[in-house]
Image (cartoon, rainbow, N blue to C red):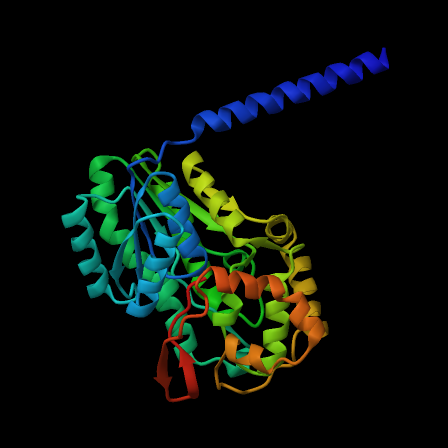
Length: 360
């Protein structure tokens, strides 16, 4: 009798799972001929998202702030067998965003899916951070996303159709130390995205908040480091590379597009990211204590050193065979996903050199 009940239970679970899978499959939208804009798409995740949407049959526009990087991205996408429209645009500049929108309206007459992906990564302790670091992070990851969203929203609402996809971060849910400019901007965008999703309910416009954990896109080589630069680079690079705690960039891009097709309001990539956000949501005091202990035990000591160095430059100095072996996945991703292009710098009175931007 007990065995019979066990089999009946298993059959019920299997039937429920099959029904759920069928329902999910039926909810997936057909994206063919949809007009898609992906910001920060000259390399890394943005480049992969452009390819994935194009493979779904979408008409994709990529944009970035450096012409050379944009040309390289377009050429690489062509080598992958997909065609995209490329437009030079610095999303932190509202005038350039307005120009981008005019170009897209003239070419397509609409934008169906907008992916806010442009980002910048700065790593270092708070004594080494400057106001410029926070300003640059907010300009790209919050204001840039806000400018583009507000420019596109009226035509989406008028058509009662459209999708806005905001790529934030687990750092937009949990305060990660030594990444404060980054998490400040990501928290701002996460709050905006979640509030917008609720406000637009019933309007026909869907908002999806993407919460990635660590991804192997090679972006750590284009991150910028302060403080004990080599030590900061070491911990960040290992987290960004190890397969157990990070996800392959191509897998991440596919999962994000599938979440968009399903119309998910929120999608968290990787089990570690899901576990961390759930634990933090339930037990914030305990989580913050654990994070604090981690800072003391694992992360480099805080120091005032506002000079910024690019990860790729630090990598060249790392004569550590074990480290090189452990980060080989990231270097491979960097080669494949256009992460070896030249950086863009802006002068800062408090730093020797400061990063303008990086695409994840």
